[in-house]
Image 1 (cartoon, helix red, strand yellow):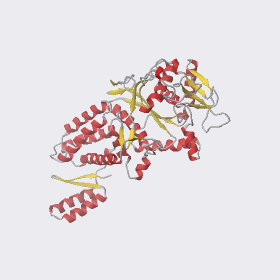
Image 2: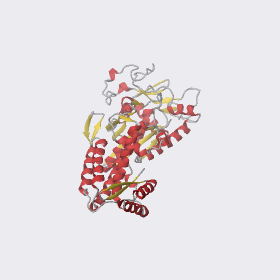
Image 3: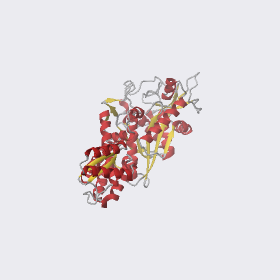
Image 4: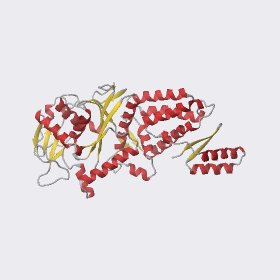
Length: 467
């Protein structure tokens, strides 16, 4: 399997470090508001990674997180915690905000048919691990304390900027983060933030340095190492994580252990909306709830995500979403052929085996989902034209199950139509043969009301389920 490693800036052959077991950590959602399609597109990318690894015979231990404390509104470790900000916005406690939007985020993952990770972990449930990591860094001389917290001294780590490729000496004050006059370097980052004096936060804990809360970056390192070990195989996230969050994760983790934190770093590009970057000021962070109000199935959204490569800048449009829905309808019609193969169909078992192999090759080549889908569409269109021979029924069924394993579109969930519906199709064919087209149209309408689509071919009527 080939994956593009941000750390080395090249495509590399991937094998897990230990036997057949892949350790994977991906950055999850900060649950202070509804997750938008840009967030969910990244999670779908990593779900595809998990599915392809599993299909390739690997055992995958996937850990992803819920950030429910410590993510401040700026990369400068200044401003409000996003959970506290959400609490003020809605007149609730930070804990209530975290529970509500955390539950909603997880519900969205299920709607998109995201594989359930081995561990879905919350920052607030791993405060002792985070404190222990900061203590280790303190013992090793990588920290210093200023008025607002405990900070990591990036000057103590010679290769701090290796993920970005930027020379640390080239960091300009204010170019990446605003300058805190007490910080030794603009790149230094908070490991533990002190609670404001004379103010009680909703979320704060006792620590060796006083009451406060962990920095955003330390949570991922602490939780990844707890569940996956000091060196993991793959760490994934968005490209916006590269310059700050992931760079800081590497710094604190490797300073603490003296070992590489992750062998591979994968990053998903942005999802644009109508060609514009998602931003709160534009209010264009479309949610699954908003799409549901327009009758959009989350699986249409999933297919839209799969139609672009994870390293390309994808663009969400309603026209594109409608096209994805139509494409999924065509794939469902293809899957439904497994219930109605014919004696002399031109597609045989080899057709499905060959396409499966091509799709796997594309998916194993840095998750080439668009090219894999292109191969699938070619076969699906051919099957609709030439139909499938009865001797290939099992091969088609196996292929549809394969599609569900790697694409997650639930194509195999559809069932055969009832005997009553089959009888309606036969009656309609009889009406057409007798040139009673009014009766035939009436029967077609009856079937369509039951979400059964009829397509007439030279060998009879072929049905598929409508969404």
